[in-house]
Structure formats: C-alpha cells, structure tokens
Length: 232
Image 1 (spheres, rainbow, N blue to C red):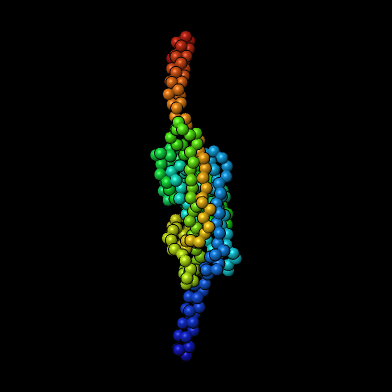
Image 2 (cartoon, rainbow, N blue to C red):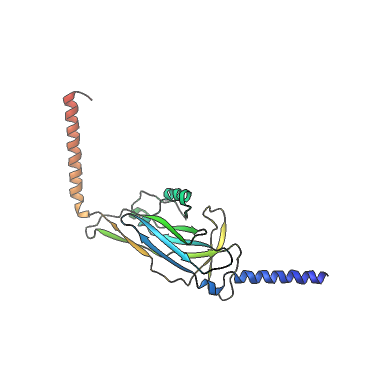
C-alpha cells in the first residue's frame, strides 16, 4: 500500500513537471508577434503597442520594456490619471523632470503592462532641444521595446526553446519581482521616430534686443502713467 502511494506521488510530480514544460511550447512561441507605431504631431504624441499570440489554455501576461532617449519623456502624473480613468499600467524606472530640456536630461525605461489586453496606447512628449542655425527640426528615434511574457501556471520552458529569463516587477504596483521570459525571435520593425521643432539660433540677438527693448518701454509707460496720476 505504501509503495502504491509513493508511485502515485511520483507520477503526480512527473505530470506536473511535463505540464510546466509544455505551458510555453516552442510552436506557440512562434505565433507571438508585436508591433508599435506613433501617432499625432508636434510635441505630444501617442505610442501604440499591439501584441498577439495564438490561443492557449492558460492566462498569459505581457510586459513591454521600453527604453526612451533624453529627447522625449513620459508624464508620471498623466500616467497616474490614465491609470485611474482607463486602466493604463505604466511603471517608470526613475523620476522624470518634466521641465528639463533635452540636453539636461537622461534616458529612462518604461515598463508597460498589458494585463489582459493585447493593445495599449501610451502618451509620450518631446523635450525642448538646443537652438540650431542649420536645422529647424530634430529627429528623435525610439527603439522597439523588449517583449516579456509570464504565466502563473508556468515556471519553465520546453527543452530547446531559445529564451532569456528576465527579472521584473510582477505588476505595476512594484511590490514583488517575478521571472519573465523574453521573446527573442520577434521581427524587428526598426522602432519609430518623431521630428521636434527647434529654435533658430541665428535669431538669438534679435530676440534678446526686442525683448529688452519691449521691457524697457513697458516699464517707462507704466512709470509715466503712475507719475501722471500720482498713484504709487
């Protein structure tokens, strides 16, 4: 009787292990695809992400790891509002100075959680760049994000599946760390780019002179009226 229980327990472990190995089969991973595009114009844009995979018999959670250059930023206060209003889940890896220009800023990483979704739209904003006397626009390139997947029913992969394990927050709340599987075979769409207007440096002297002159004349006008009406 004891041998029977031991045999049954061993079979359970074997079946559990096989289920773990088969929950992200290599054939299913080949069906995973991702695309991104950018919309709108000017300094305020939207990044559109779309992730798709074939049908599978358990829940799959997706995470996009998006590196952003110093030329753009995400507004954490806007993201928090969108989280409450629309359920958008984006976690930034550092504090972002919303007022700093491009040349005083650094790049950062945004974690975009697709909890139960296959498409998401994330707002992104351009920063002010140094004035230039040779170009009226500057191009900012945003590379494609890394796609990570995980499932609460899966801890390992089938043998022979090319993958990389990646530790990242389990949810946007950032209370615990989970092991995610990075999908490496995705077709690279080259990322997206946006053009941001820059100031004309050849007009610096003219702008400064006009600004100072306007300020002096305005002050003189105000002082004259105050003196005329005798009210200080």
